[in-house]
Image (cartoon, rainbow, N blue to C red; front, top):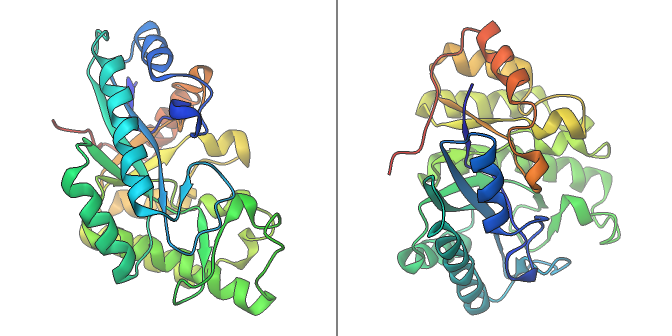
Length: 272
């Protein structure tokens, strides 16, 4: 069974959505036999973002300062660890030149070990309206039905463009939007297949995220996506998406059984 995860979260700086400190997450990882662990708190930035969470930033200078503090927090905790500890980020990707320029500028000085591409936001085409899916209703459900359908299409476009960007070591929970009943029916087969075709063409690593079994009764991504990506030889890594020490390795046996049933042997691992 895989004995590591690179998609985990802490409560660093009092702003992130994990339940425990880096030291506590590392300690539990050691206790359950992990060979290494990566901590990947959220990196969320956009000038048009509603800051409905303290981990959302629309001020670049403040983002830069806080993200570096987060890396430093992980490095300090790693000093006492008996296993390798990596500092990463789960990054909400946006395709505009403005966002790309900001992200590239940030990574020039931010000494992280890896970046995970992810998608928790719905946007219109020019990114003048950007809403977190968890806080969408709190924001007043601002899109019309037609606009919302287009925003979900943009979600899948983001998956394709994130993979093509070359920014990310792997892509997180491809279909995370399906945990939201208001959004799940709006995804089209055409858009989903375009995402699978893009990852297949690029052989871009992605994750089997086990948190879906807890949140919506199914892993991320859909089973048919796993089948297609396996046929294309795309590397996969299992992630627990742990926001709590008790989430580490959650459903890993089930994930291994699913991959074994598919004879999915092309597995991804961070090389540092």
